[in-house]
Amino acid sequence: MPRGKVDGQPAYVLHTRPYRETSLIVEAFSRDHGRVALLARGARRPHSALRGLLMGFQPLELSWSGKGEVLTLMRAEWQGGQPLLTGLALFCGYYLNELLLRLLPREDPHPRLFERYMQILVHLGYAPPGRVDEADLRAFERALLTELGYGLNLEQDCQGRPIEAGRCYRYEIERGAVPAAAGEAGWVAGQTLIDMRGDNYADPVTRQEAKQLMRRLLAHYLDGVELESRKLVRELQDL
Image 1 (cartoon, rainbow, N blue to C red):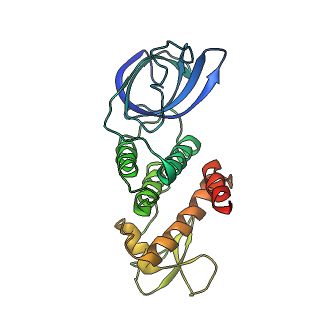
Image 2: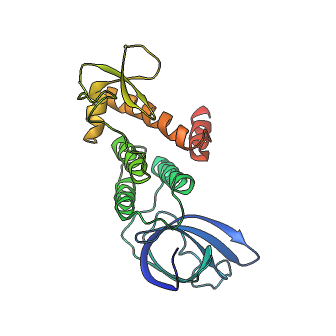
């Protein structure tokens, strides 16, 4: 747990919620201290120096102090250079933040995951309107599971044999890739697993099968809780 004072830590705001009349509780993802909860005193006051700074998806440098579960935010500085997310890119950003909030333990450093998160936000910020590279989302999902110790074995099947492009598999949580028959529930092509190993999602079949596989795996680690960001996208599609 962070102790004492931390200065100038690269970070992003994942979520904020009101606290008492004028303050905010900020859930932030920092490079060297992981996910931290910060009390931003007076941040909701009209003339607060923090007002307008604590936005999601924008690169910040945060300074905080304290010893408890919720630390005190002392300073926030915007670093610039990141376009505001809009449309589909914004929904994807909410999705990434929700994954981090639900799966990432507090105060557990993941600097490599932080760099991956920062890169995908840049990609989302410069993506054409209404278009998002699904490869970024799948790569981030896989990186998140790896950082949490749930990494996928995409090299070998459950019997230690190399994954074969022309075979079908069923990926099981505890066992990995199990040889399966085409059409069997939850089956995935060996080529898809090979492509995922290299974060190569150029093939439409790979994109679709990887999306379904990652959705199933994440649902398991989320204990079946449906993400609010997915609900919102589905409701908008229905409209």
